[in-house]
Length: 239
Image 1 (tube, rainbow, N blue to C red):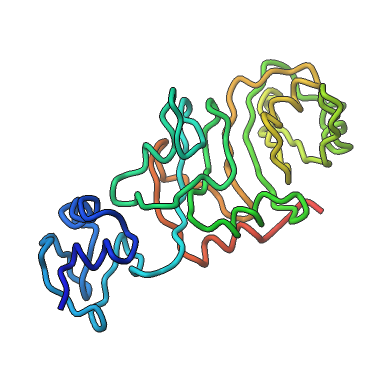
Image 2 (image 1 turned 45 degrees about the vertical axis):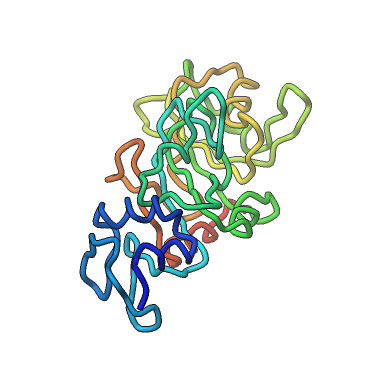
């Protein structure tokens, strides 16, 4: 038999202090029952232990965050709060990082994981994984701009973006559009609009592949994803 907190710590869920907080928060179940007793004895070979519904010992974790503005997509930063800093304690563990990034003032869908291979596949332009945004701009999105996005916008530094899809969000408002790209250069969406003489007022990422931001997830909140849900990232592209 083994103490529950020692068992969790030995399997990389967190430090002893961190897993004790997890247990006390009610995030841990043993054989289907919530267990808030840190020194509970379990049989490591026969007790089914879950943390936030995920079996302990699973190699990877996938977290959907509705990123708020003002937080940077990094594991650490000396000046600003990071997306790792604002994770709830019960989801924090070693090795987590944002798979890709959103600009500091951009909101929306961000995946946080410890799966480096998934991040590489998701971010590689060769994989053509779509990232879709809702952009509010300070001017009119017209047919000429839409066609320029389709051909591939050339940025101010001479970089030629891959073809992108730009559509008006509604027929009644030509200042809000959805943008679908399959690469992720620094400030890319903002720079694409800037090349067309428009400035972004608000930007939100709403999907990656066929994985959409949960409309019931408040800004700043997170939830874990199943392996089936994360596979939606790699379904659908614009080519």
